[in-house]
Length: 331
Image (tube, rainbow, N blue to C red; front, side):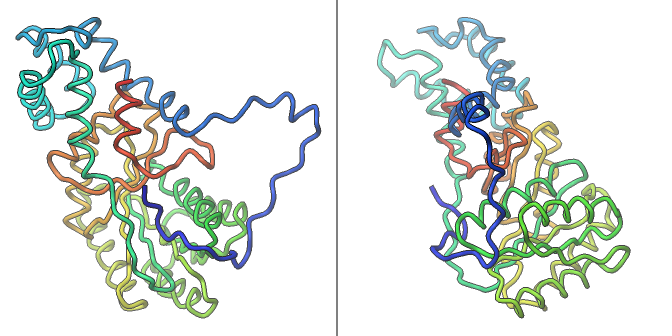
């Protein structure tokens, strides 16, 4: 499984150590769950939507019209989308006829879903640009600022120095939220309240180059893809980033709230057309019964899913692994 920008070096300014706890507090603290356990727990709503509504359908040994109809309803309810649902049902019928007599429907569906999602796993990128600029976009409330904080900690732990560019200059709260993450991770935040967001990006990249920073995370204002003037501004920000650093932005991530379901697919198409996405960060899968949107994206607008989030913890944003995701969704 790839991990972006992973190198062996000491960060310029390491994050502060966690606060010490007393032996009694350590004993009282519950054991930390593995990522697989957190992912399985986080996908409970989506899993229940698929399996709870089907009852015994997924364990049947026959694939008749009634079974297919119930599967279709469950997949659509989980926001898999019409195109992906039709694809999965067609694959299911074809594979089932070739499968062993004792195979159940769930096993065949799991394999078909894995093959559909597998292309969304991204290969690691070998570009050694410094600083490496990662531009993040998304609508308000998708979890963009929180994702930036989690990515910062993740890449610091991998040995990288990070600088944050507060490109959402319209909302004072946005800069404050990013500053909180900057303080928490002990990294610099370049901000300018009420200024030109493109100018902030330019200044941030120049500062990163002067300080020898490895990675710049460039935040942008939340916007709906239907707001044409704001999408044009997003294009301008990307052009200015390119003038400040050759080849930048090296990554363009869309932060997508899984709760938006099929509207998320529309966002992917619109933002990709405007700024050319290189990956997605899909958040709030633990609060959604619409995990099937990944299947819709895979079928209708394949875009690499770089990270998925299933909680508020600093470690609850992890690289997307299709096999892990499918096994958690259809155990």
